[in-house]
Picture 1 (cartoon, rainbow, N blue to C red):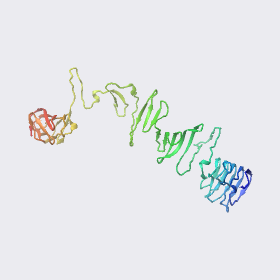
Picture 2 (picture 1 turned 90 degrees about the vertical axis):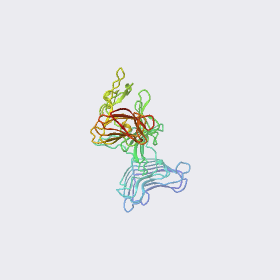
Picture 3 (picture 1 turned 135 degrees about the horizontal axis):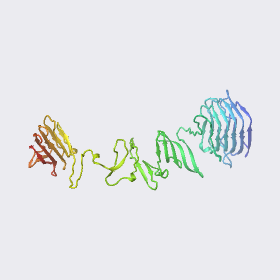
Picture 4 (picture 1 turned 120 degrees about the vertical axis):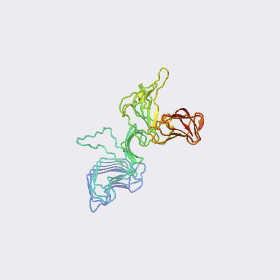
Length: 439
């Protein structure tokens, strides 16, 4: 159809067999600018392009210039047609590049597994195009050529859509496929009065595919199912998922109170790869606690409980009983050394001895820090020497050692307790038994 005079219209092509075309079998073309045409039906025709004619298309709408209407041609139906081809040219069997209010539906296109063409291309200046229900087979170069999303209309229905099947295996009822190599994904949109409420979107972000439940579309998700099997709640500033349930905030997961408030569990900004596993058990922490109450786990993997610590819970204390006179009984820290030892500040309060020593044992005190205290007992008849650190001295009674000096004893059960006084670098004995030599 070559539009020269007009405006005019009404063209019906039905029930024909069109074979071995050398150019597009049915072409709608505007030869004179601003000549408009309306109403074209191409229904129930059969097409065939086999060798040697393997370059032609079947239905083409060319670009044109309208006069007063939105498009130069409008109201087109291409339906219930079928083709049997072996076309090798890089064309599209149906190629719509202009027009308004167009339906392409229920066609059966078969290129018999021959590479080259695609089945349907829609774009250019075409608008309000509804394409559905076309069976496109044997196009190894792709069922669809260039499809301009802005040209297409939604498939609208007021009838519910049901998928019914009777099969013994899992069946696919709906496939949404965005073939764009840019990885822009595809989505199901839920709307009210034309306004988007939520979407369920497969989106490629940060190097991975995710299934996002979003608010109002875009990438602001309520919940994300990641392709590594992890589930993420909301990247929004604050989204209440449901009352008495979950609340999700960047970097944290919260539990909402039945009446008010939210309890949050937060990870640090740089969380690493870590795991916290809680034990089995039922503990209501809102009904526990009080003075001297602590959280305890009394067995490996046992439930968390709340209570007051008993003496048996303190591994370094044999008994700790305050009687009516205020007397405290406790077990001191003891350590036996049979070779030279550099005493640590964390050893403060320890009673050292040389039980089993075969020769002299030297104890070098740590750097001066007021309040440190250690006791030494010669339990073997060998020299036990306590050495002051650099710049420090040790006094026994009124006798003070040289700088970095020492005190020694070898008689069994000679004992001395030495503490760091408030005078800088000065250690002193606050109790001795036996004979100690100050050097």
